[in-house]
Length: 264
Image (tube, rainbow, N blue to C red):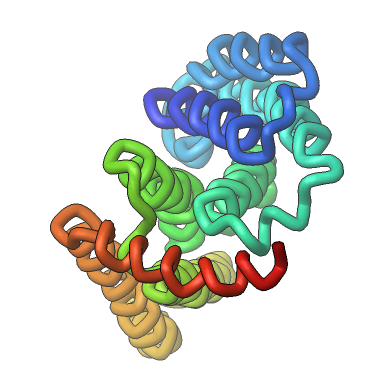
């Protein structure tokens, strides 16, 4: 997270103003989000080990860091939301921006969730369960992967000076991974709560496995949708790179010329 999070912050600070053609709302908030992240994030990781025989002072640092991390997270959140003010219609019309803002939402949620995991009573319930796995995927698949996909769909056409091969395929790519990831995440989350409650009651792990089997099957199905989304994007980018769109563009211009003459 400490390696990837600065990339996400930088990516959204570039993408959102660039696509909306509005300046970043606050340079001061961007400094708070960056330096707050750099200062607090280093102590966060240990909140996954609060139930282990590790030094108490290390656990205290993890708890304080996890809660304090909300300061730069909220600074970043306010900065992006205020930058988007008056431009929300572009969320529906610009697919790379939609990917980026979806990543932004997941990034906010994963940080709030991480702060909850630093609470001892909550951590006792979720420790070593699939809830933690869902939390990790909320960051890697929910935030960073969505931003990466959005950047690919945005940068490749910019470099090649031509549009994506298929906007419809890009829409399929988006909805496949949105539905796939949400199903994937909630299947793991529910399985994690079942595991945690069962273990707190002293139920042996071998007796818990049949209870979470349906959620693992759901995880596999929704995971396949995520993989399919990646395949759709790879095909779309491949065709974008290798298809000559100049002829199609000339035909579209030629079809539009009579209408332009009539309008004139």
